Length: 218
Image (cartoon, rainbow, N blue to C red; front, top):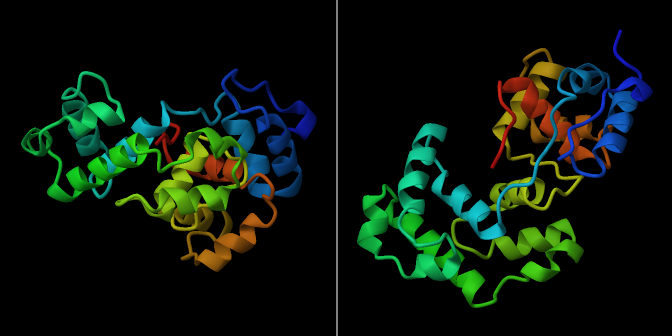
């Protein structure tokens, strides 16, 4: 028998402030979460790095394997004296290409750095802005689409109610846990997630965790 909300074990110190409340809600409202959450109670979402590095890593990792992304990032991050927007703008294109970056990704990283150095992003106001406003701002950067912006909301800003419907892992996990492996549409996923609100981020994290031997991180 799964633990009741009151019996859930203590969460790690890095867990977001809302995590315990979210887990109690999800265990009460959703049969799959009632099973999953106690399995991974020693872990929780953790914020990543700084905003520029988080977004730069997401660009480097696009359309390549996790292993390739890590290798390219290691070579690229060794180029500037410090991984800051201003330092990236000082790099030579040929050196960035030699690190394994495509010409398109070099353009994306330069555009990202320009957005930061030219003050086109409201970094200091993000904490007060709503999710959709941040997504709209981030997707003005070349190479950043809605999915990347949603990963940023989850993994950097720790927003509690993000449902990334373009995420293949989320759809796969919902298929396995709720539909016996049958294909799942975005509307199917949205319907399942009605029970998760206002903690869609937390439920999504546990769905990801059910698929992978290590916690997902971007």
